[in-house]
Image (spheres, rainbow over the protein chains, first blue to last red):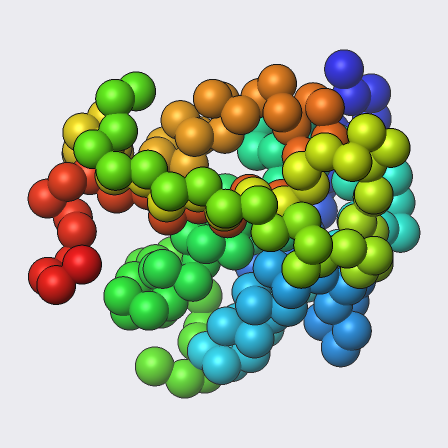
Length: 112
Length: 82
């Protein structure tokens, strides 16, 4: 079980940022190929996003898996909604759906 | 789940030793790629499809599998020529 304070911290981060990526490493230096892929896609779309390095915080690393009942990292959230991990984000990007979802949720996208 | 098609690849060696990767003491699989076509995915969102696959792998995840690349599709979603 995750400590409720960790769940609250995660909920706070997700609520406070329109687009937030829980990843391994930082956008400038991802520590995992799956995280790197999502960073590249968000950069391609010119979407401003907040990132959380789960390698720097063990409680978040474990807590985020319980938060969305999703066992892997990265995890992308838009306006509080869990969008998916690397494969889902890539499929949505390739199908043009990611920009649509961002636009529908009122997130400014630099590139279409 | 009764898949119409299923491919599973062990990609652990490709990721050995990267940041955050934990080598398993038992030498088990850490990175898995799963391609599955099943009627069970019909009408479901991508997140729901992935959750079905993740649920089937819950035991392996608990034992140290930590990355699963998933391509889950319903039979009618197969791209032409696939």
